Image (cartoon, rainbow, N blue to C red; front, side):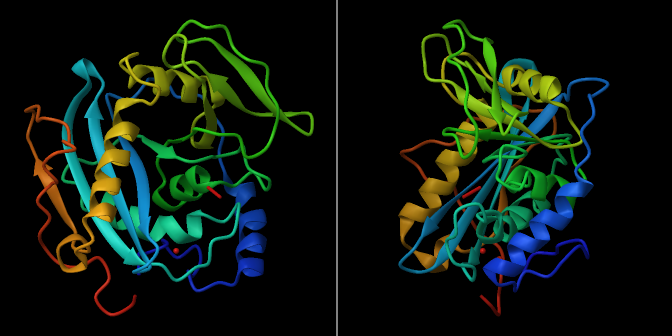
Length: 269
């Protein structure tokens, strides 16, 4: 099981997990970044519900040229039930394994899921940011809590996402004329910094920023493969030193080799 940095154990009941979220929410730090990161990792996970496995991917991109410089994958047994608002307890162990196997340490995480835009102000982006002590941004494709006005159609336009009178995120147009995504603070950033990071790592050709888009592709490839022996293993599948590599392809799954993410045991955003 992935290390939680001594903050908590993972074998919790849903009621214990909710209580933990309420406790840890007070530790989230909201502050502007002094400078935007040169590299960021996108994080996402997919599931094989029949085999009860979570497949996580982390992909590191350089802002300059939006070049992929590293990626890693991990898998872990699903031991926590699906409960809306508690998805981090299903995904985080595998995601932490994947991030820990990157050869290039990212300066920032962009997590497919919510941060403060969560009923208890502690979505998966807050959870991962706190556990890893990294600036973290939540980026979701749908709203979990709050209401918003549609932003203007051009790229970069945004409007506040408001829940119970509090601004918890932003509806951000990453690609002109395409549905907005929902950005929120995870940890060690403020909302304006979070929006700037998402735009910095977006080409404008897609709805999602490149690191999250690549992590989504890789995690889905692993979950679709259906070969547990081949895909429950963990490795850094690309390791470069200042050299760009091609993004993951839908046609040729990545080579994954190494040790299993969890040998003996076998977790809404």
